[in-house]
Image 1 (cartoon, rainbow, N blue to C red):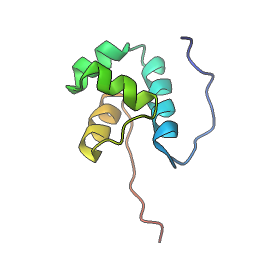
Image 2: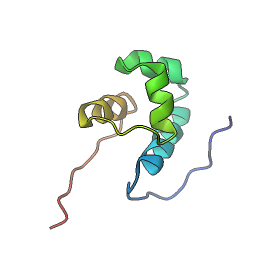
Image 3: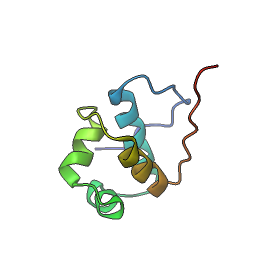
Length: 79
């Protein structure tokens, strides 16, 4: 699978969009799913499902993945 071309930032409104963004970032970092799974302590099958938008994950897991990809997630409450 080839990396997707860079896209403008999108608001994460679904598990599918989050999964696509994690996949893009993983490619940008030159990591395989196995490498990212090992680095974050997440099962590779679970990460694969996450990238495909199939899993609803605990916030803790999202932060583990994003931290490994050098991404800082800002939580905004919409006010």
